[in-house]
Amino acid sequence: MPVDMDRKGRIDSLLDFIKENGGQYRHVVLDKFSYGSGISRRTCQEYLSILVSLGRVKLTDSNWQGH
Image 1 (cartoon, rainbow, N blue to C red):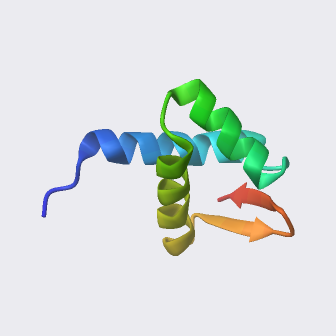
Image 2 (image 1 turned 90 degrees about the horizontal axis):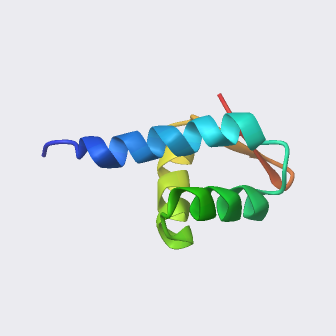
Image 3 (image 1 turned 90 degrees about the vertical axis):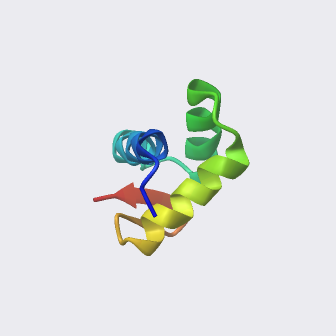
């Protein structure tokens, strides 16, 4: 199955955003990214679960940290 490059770009953009804003509470990071990108919060959560499953993002207490 071919990878949707637009989707990959949006996921990478979320990872970059988390790297820059990861010290904030996770709901704040998702809300800010959703608002700034125009991507629904639910879709952002789906992207986040992909990043977590790949080991690119981890939850520390209530904050997200990107690697």
